[in-house]
Image 1 (cartoon, helix red, strand yellow):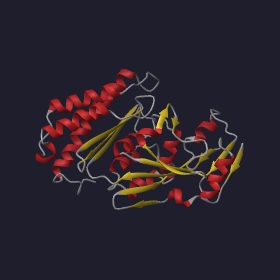
Image 2 (tube, one colour):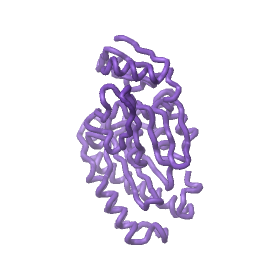
Image 3 (cartoon, helix red, strand yellow):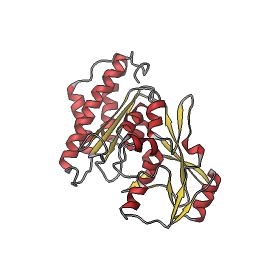
Length: 296
């Protein structure tokens, strides 16, 4: 196994173009596990740790530009107000040591359905900026996951930045695991209110071949909130609406039975998380004068 260590982003892109099978490594929290267990033996490892721009973030007027290697700890400490859903998801990642090393780019590159960041990114409506020597492009998060541990990257492309709109409403995230730390999700769920567009977005993890949204549930809730004037009057969402939303989220899941949980349990748990999170975000929305101020 050869080790490539570019000193700049341009050198990294050139190395990836020359060696398309090279596996990028930054935090290494996924890649090194696979190598240590001999599940993977790449011909080349492409070390991105010297690329400073990947560890930088910028808060703009409307969006956050998040470098692919920004550690989860930094997200928790610095972006809780702008990206509350992703900050909550970051809290659930493994251990402090791994949160200090791992970043969202690694989750996206691995594209495991159990990746902790995926539901929050889906709920927030993120875009992934990727680049090669041929140029750069933006991939909407909904189009990024193409199969089990597969993504939309071309062989010569690297993940550069994740662009996420600053939260304009409350966001939540929950994860079910077999213990409280250092655990792969049995299932996970993310929910974000977007009052500016009067829409709701969801994200489901570890309950389908890829991270997914519960689009039918979103459409139902969007219509129910609009028809009932909930965005304006701030009334409590009725139990029947909450139950229907939860049932539709549960129905969107397409899980399997494995050592961590059964498909039946995963569907049930997704519905429970969806109902609870809807209650939490709506109470937060109502309690902050129907704005995000003070919600984080």
